[in-house]
Length: 288
Length: 314
Image (cartoon, rainbow over all chains, first blue to last red; front, side, top):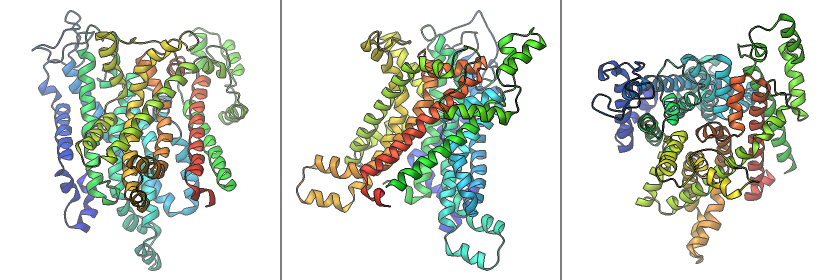
């Protein structure tokens, strides 16, 4: 992500990403997110049982030394499922944020630069955004089936228009600058103008937006899996765990509390980083 | 002013057309065939052909779209392939719990959000401000359905104050309706309260720095009047925009909340129709939500006319 901010940092001398990290909330967010990332990557090393290992005799056990977060209704280790579930959440969040940002920026560049296209593209995006994200994602998942790559596809369709909107408003500002006019007058090709002169100006707001997309995509994946319209059953997912936990809330509240707490912590961490980045990268957006 | 209203209506129609196209073509990409879901595996070829003809599935996709969307425009959403009733009726029967839930959740979101946002702005950079902003951050980050589950655990399972799940129609007992909807409405509205609080605070901070606020203070108006009549009124436009957006989120969120609390509403109907491959109901429900959302946004835009006279003349 720091590579994306390079053009901005050159202009100001000091890396705003580093500056953002000095804020306590960003530091907290970064540490918490790093912890979740560690759990996801090191899942096979820090768990003793596989996430899908059934143990019918040891079902619905309260947290203990052997099972720090207890076991679920099929005797699976909740801690192990939480750890492997982190892989899905982070992967889906990151992939959705990256794809939405890239596609959204591309759409905005083309639409914002060629004004005749603008109206058509924006109406299309408005139409996509007039559907609540959950509903659009459910409809897409019903169409394409429960696969992890399909979740990313559905969430990208939900969030790409939001990134495009943000990028477009940046394009509209940048394209009025004198240097764009100058490049035009010097006979630069459209593609070169978009790539060299307009694109860098859209980076900062899109980066901030992408962080929020990351956070909400993690939440939306959990909601979809909670509804049974997300991850396939063999992939551990925090949302699906919560839906199983709901049925056993009286006997086994740990099935609900632990996955939900880690999910909340992850989203909180990303949101805090997003707020800090926004304040550090774009002083105009700051609300002192 | 007339031009403004006409332009807004025009863009609403355009948006609804796009929504119709998106919804129809996404849902018709569904791989499984509805006929096998309805007739079972061992239906004869003739039976399948007859059913496909009855459901218009033998027509090319764009013909199906035109006939479906033509119906939608006239208020006819088609018939449920599973329940054999008009989609309008299928949704209508499930609308009361969903409408009540969405209404109460929006009420929670707006009252809590605006109040907290104003308080945070007035007490800017004090511990009250930080506390409100922290709660708002939690609201943005905690998944509503997990919050709902925690509330069930606390208030229904442990304390036994409120019913854990279900719904009682208004006609039977309005008090019970409310008792059943308190937790769902709070769990659904909390995240939107957070969004509204952040926007209200930011917008109020801008408004409180304006010259007219200084003027109002210097002519000796009581602070409460300055905050509400002068600052808040001017801060309201961006807040209203956010409220319009949050109504869309609430309308989508009912699907999840109704699942958490076992509420037999239209949101559950969406999930059930996915499982039954009942496309007409799924399409109808999605298009209905989009319509409500477009309508709300139209009302929000028109309310600017009342709030800000400049909009009237531009």
